[in-house]
Image 1 (cartoon, rainbow, N blue to C red):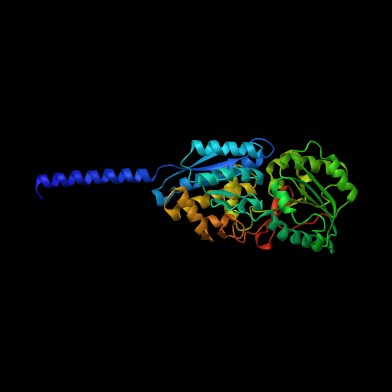
Image 2 (image 1 turned 120 degrees about the vertical axis):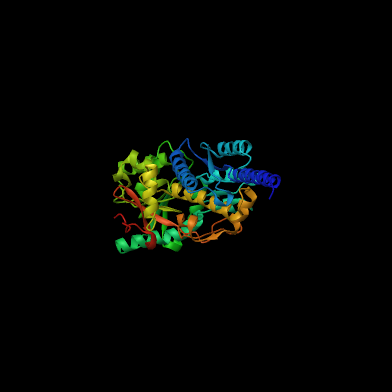
Length: 408
């Protein structure tokens, strides 16, 4: 090789290195994903728990090399407060989509009515959207970019009610025969009780002796709880979605002489396990209360739970934290599968996903596969109970951190 040829080779080699470095830098650009949560209003604490879980997942993915199929691209979480009504959520999501046109995907928004509003916007924008919300309406609209990781409220009722009745029977030696329902009119409680009004509970051997519904937030729970006191059901389905409403009703129950040791309380959703309830109510008011939920820290997740508590300062892992942690992990897994952050390719990867490791381990059942309508197939539920000041998983047996205790 003469000097001229060597010089040309060196120049060409340098140019190639610069080109490769440029390509690598381009591949490794920041990838935006979004979280639309209620960070103000009655559901703010649940939104905060959701945000904490998503932020921790983003932090850990970035610390572990980012999206490896995209040259180590780092994730950036864009968090938006949707407020306290469907209209506010819809407006907030429209601004999000306008200001961040390159979103690879997103998650939210906790209350089903909020999620229904959000996903109208994200569907039109072609953004794959993950949610833990329970309403079957979310995946029954023919949308192609919506993915629900929770069992629907209807399925939670169908699977959860027999388990609750069995708990009572094992503890007392006889099945309960009467039940009361006090609920707000948001889509999740409406879905949960879809087949319960009138004679719908007869299949469980139950008579419905109280049936009350209201629009949240409550200003006074007294009249509702007086009706419960007069009817004396064997247990009460207290189906509320806002922390302040739960506080009002549990305090009123105790005030009129029906503490948890005498009237079993069953809720649906993760709100009854909010750390804020322990702060504002104390463990005695919550002791023994039970809730059916889509996700919770459980047996087999001890390492994750400890790391979560150490890094966030939270006292335990709630449905909202672990589900949104898992949602970020699912989006990351989809990007790795698609080798792209293009939202349509991420969407296709989510639709074709069938995994039982990695991101799937953060959901009950440890398996993630979505049906054509975006609903996670065969998604099981868990039942959680307040015991000694902590909400712990008590059902199913393979996930239980403690044995259930039926208040008598």
